[in-house]
Picture 1: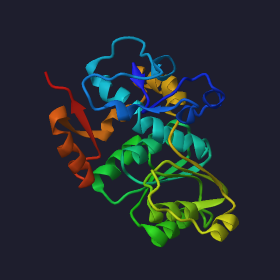
Picture 2: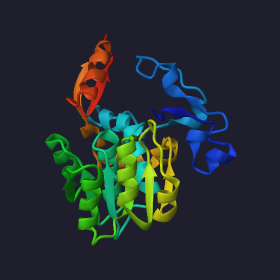
Picture 3: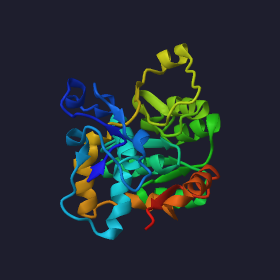
Length: 262
């Protein structure tokens, strides 16, 4: 079974519209101890998605990624309308940003620009499908995106950080008529209303309705078409969870995989 970080009944009007993360009866699964050896899943009938069988060990990291960072990155790319003939820019090189790149590639994007300063993450971004790397940030980053897109900006932008700088960089990197999806949890962001008004872009975002995408993502992983588990670049026992968070905070790890102990 694979479970999203939000539990949903998957029968209410909001769920049926594809937004299980805002289910009328939504519950946050993580609050019940998602980093535990055993987990009680509320609304299990509408939340759990079965795998075709018992997965082989090497598929576990990718299936785990599907439950959160892959599902979130995928939502970012879908909501930004990444697809054939499109140029996609991804702001953020964490696990979600990297998997938004993978998603954009799978959705057929023609050009994928990864905004990243870290060599190890740049390497994985290219492996996942990025065609260009932009190291600049802020206004310089926007200028570079414009330079790569004939002065217009990207058709599709995914913001996967959640800071003021990242959000403004994402808005300013989106061409008029383009689509921006923000999946980074917002921290103190203030968007100038007049600038947003004249940007004339489609703006969407929020917590990813991972449940909507899980059947497709599980199928792609099961058939080994994608390997999102590569974002887990550090494995630690469950007892060292604090060390795992520290490694990610200090950018020594993209994503930490915790393993239960006997």
